[in-house]
Length: 191
Image 1 (spheres, rainbow, N blue to C red):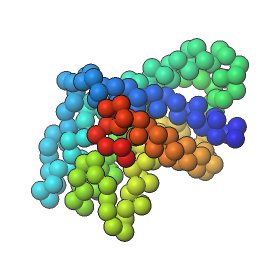
Image 2: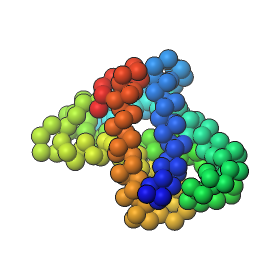
Image 3: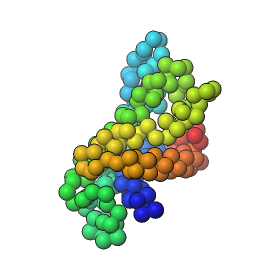
Image 4: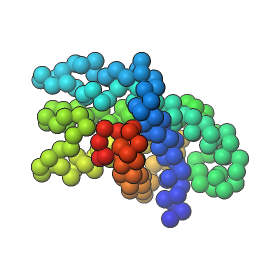
């Protein structure tokens, strides 16, 4: 259980970034950056990523992650209880830089999944149907972890246990965020 708490603490900046992104959607913050990443480019006549993958998503998640990781490195690191949850020495990193990179990489890691779904004819925000539904449902919940772990590998050892716990943690939290985001007008769908 202690290791799961430490994984949760490790990924709190990313969750904060996702909340910032939801607030940006709800209140039209950073509207200037709500432009599609794919610039409406097409592959085989189909949009690359779709309208839901925007520069605002990357910017908002990166900024929110940076802000929270800065809080962890500058404030919470000084509290022994919080410091005991650290999986690496938070005092040894630039919280803003690491947090921004963590958030941006996590959002960029979602793009291959979006590209594949667009090529399979799945509309942005829609679920995959049929025999691949379960695989894509799980992938939708955890695809951002690939980007996160690639960044975290620069400051800590990546273990199979850590990856497995982060998949479990993010899978559950993503479900909750999706439902609450939908209820509070931050998401178009509850999934």
